[in-house]
Image 1 (tube, rainbow, N blue to C red):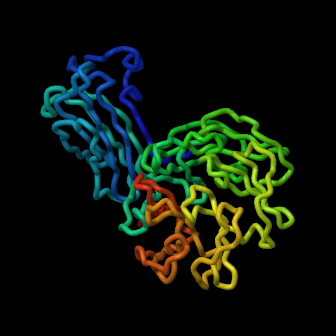
Image 2: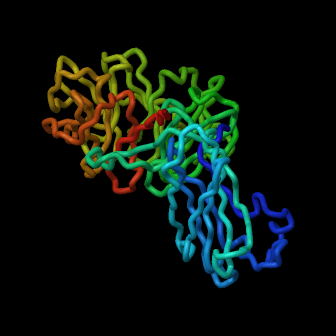
Length: 402
């Protein structure tokens, strides 16, 4: 896995024996904090700044140091700042105005009795800044707010999938790289390895097939449907089908909070309940699968089917109802995206047009303007990263260093 953002604990570069017992002295005989008291974490790294989180918790077992000393060195001169007192709940300190093209070492040291004169030294981690330039992850809350940077990574937007693997009703970022799966909690946490798999990321699909409000990973291999519970479980075979993965779509057409599998074959719409049931015919239509889109436009907690034909939008309730006309629009279906931007548990339609975003409430309302943005829909992804039951807009902004 490429280094994207790193999470380092005190025993990373300290004497190995300190990972197994409380360390109270260094070579100078000065008292040091217990390695369970404090940690350092490196956050967003851009062309000219590095974020460092230092966190010391007084849990009654160990006593945090009086101060910490944050120091960075560019090979020419050393600079530093005293952190007094150390943050109790975790605070990011930004090292900024860095020169592009130089390598920076960052150190955090403990100061049990203050950071003047001699002090105990404990290096959490040294990083090379020029090897860690990363692209920024930004979100627009509800599609209305200005861009907020939530994380950074050296991976590209097309490497990511999105779902709630943690189960906290926020959208996480999923990455499959070199046979390993990683998740960033709410797009804000560091990469956490959750599983291993040799399947290509293009072989993966996602949904809550178990019904525990967490996103599972789905594959179809040699006619066998298999699911990894929350992306952490081992593969479990749930069904068999000869249809290729590219013919499958996913949604909760039954309304039991589990993801079903949908196909359209010879004009017949069929559903496998939770991916485990036999095929059940729910409707028929002459529209090809490529023209269908999905969401809960009616608010029935079931997935509906959406089409646009001749500028008229239609919705089939739960995929079982007849076509019901909604709003009109000249935008082709490939320009449309879908999500609940209003926060009423119903799916809205989203477009990016002429440098501005618009939504149609429940596919019925007229276009309502959101934020201004020059990004095209192909550069955007969507999810509720904030946790307010509204869809946010996610982009990866490339950092260009001069």
